[in-house]
Length: 127
Image (cartoon, rainbow, N blue to C red):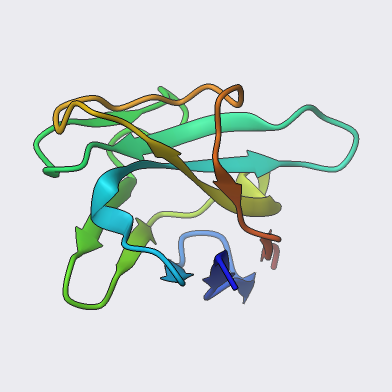
């Protein structure tokens, strides 16, 4: 079965850290650019970060820049999102998405054209 599975969410205090994982089964992630998205209650899903196939291009939305770091591990077929200095406004369900691209340098953060979505992992930042 071809699927993406996110893990690593949970409850954390403001200022804390979490590392989210996005693991693929049934296909190789290195053929895909990977994006992380989040959706807070009552809001639209937003793209927050992406990484190109060769890891040479990354993107962060301004609200997470300097606090979140995206990376990928080819051997583990997994993409990570390290989240530091978490704020209450980071509370959301976090999703990863894979989009097959020819270019190894492309990083895309839109929701259209996604080949696979994970089911999401909940991150709650609260004291």
